[in-house]
Length: 242
Length: 222
Image (cartoon, rainbow over all chains, first blue to last red; front, side):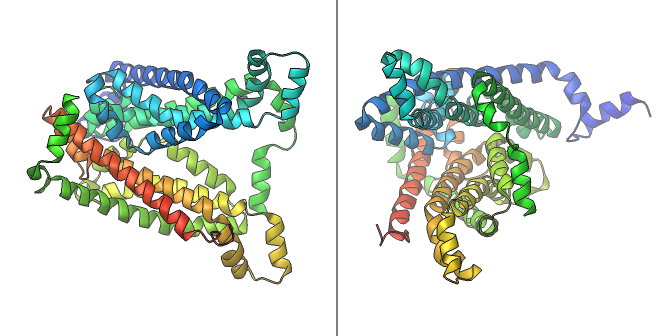
């Protein structure tokens, strides 16, 4: 039995796992992945750009904190399919529709985490910086932001991973990255296509999470002084054993 | 604004609410699959989470299951189910998918709620001679209640949202009004269906917030 025969038969037999599918449709898979990545990246970046001023506003003016948190939570409650559909009259069948929906979803997590991060900055650190003559802008940029980074990055990781998963729903308007392949595959009962696109989607999320974790470690070298003590993984194991 | 007016017209037209693909039937399907899935998810996740929390074991599991739940696309799971023999099992593929996505928030929040009970309180209860069961029911469970309800709320919201996505793979529920509207280029119907789905999600969230306030075991002391 030649490899050629085996490879072709997996497409014909509609197998779940099919190397021939990956080989023959590599261009399609690449295009979908590229669309998936850029929609996610643009959404998360815009989300950050919107969440940041909102979090600062909520902090500076406590009377805005309630409405800002309430509104972002309200948006998060709306089902993704409904959110995309409600944006249809505004954006039509476009990637802008998907990006806008994803931005609105990311706001809840990002605003909350930025606020939590800024709140956790020790008052002494602020006082010291003020005593050294730091203005509000420099205080935020050089003292508060770095100290808020771990919470901010935790939020960014959650938002990115969720956004990658949610992007698939964009298939509703044909702009769902790998979701388009899943949508197409389920209509034509093409098992290899659905499984490959789904696995790629989860892989994308895992890779993004690891990359952001790396970025966080790079940006916050001082936090590793603490982790030099017993690794977190070990304490969990000890707990399980005990 | 024309679309909103047209969507309103769609919603106030009686014939859109009746029949097999009418809004009442779709709403019924949505509530039915969501309710069953949420009940099943609670029955699976809560005993496990509360037991593990009581024993103080399995923290890594509780955290990892939550992370995995976020990374896996709902749409992909539903699509994969529809390519298995489950396809012809009625609402079953939707219900299983909903349960899978409702378990992580329930499990993680209930577990964290149990673990965050003040150790000093637990020690005091033990010192008073409470048995494991008494400790669990009279101390840990009431103190874990707020986070337990948070988990229930996010699970319920997740379930209602996921049930909407089920329409993208041809399953029932309010999402079908949306996808049917897309297929016939009927934007008012798309918006009307989306409004119904959003309204249902907000109602469920609101009802659970109200239930939380009414049922809280700590209410009397506050």
